[in-house]
Length: 197
Ligand code: GRF
Image (cartoon, rainbow, N blue to C red; front, side, top):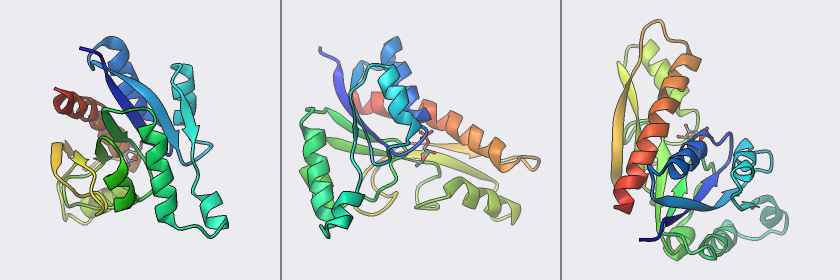
């Protein structure tokens, strides 16, 4: 059986992309990353992909905005960019652009998203900081990570995998972020593996 074809969408550092690249290289994932797309030129994840010899595409929204073109046109064109690489699975790994139904309906493969909180918790930005502050207010005693099927609603959709992440009273925000990322790197690879098999 040929390796599954993954297209990964990123916007930043790309540590989760790196976890996928490493898992594919070691054979933990019977897959290959065939394209990495970023909507930010300065995303370090693009350099990670180039170092691994993976094709990359910088695909910003700004030219559409500047031309007065609708977001849906961007999403449609983005789906064509992805579809051109015949993916078996699309993974949103730190992709910071809300995808409309136009993308989700037109892309030719399932789309998984990674969210650094448990289902229904802290959709959107600054997720780990929100959890950290809620812990300080004694509203929660743990946080978590989830991988879910992408739907138009932000950070929602059928859950593929989830895991709790402890928070300790002496934690700094950075320590909690590091623990969340560690869990993400492992859970995302497990989730991709479960979907592919
Ligand atoms: C991850 O925590 C992801 O859950 C969130 O953005 C972060 C991206 O991290 N949406 P990285 O770029 O993979 O290091």
